Length: 124
Image 1: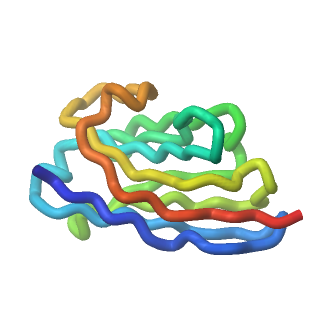
Image 2: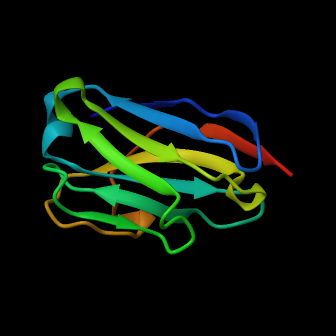
């Protein structure tokens, strides 16, 4: 199956920016919708953003609208999450996920492939 690997997490201060990357193995990545989810300790995994294969359909969670931006480069089998104006409540492990579908979904249970996660910590 497709393997996803996230990178780019780290420790930053409130108001700073980070860019997360997720690289996938296999050409099937180009036909997938891709999403970013996050999970903080003691909380359920929550939807952050998703993008379809062509980049023509993008959805964001209300909590990150205007601050985060998702994009993809199918030639590089990579998706990105640009995170600006970070807040302490953004602190979580961020996961990259993929689904063989042309329709964007926001439920984690609908995604078939997952990365190992990358930690994002935002200090106040």
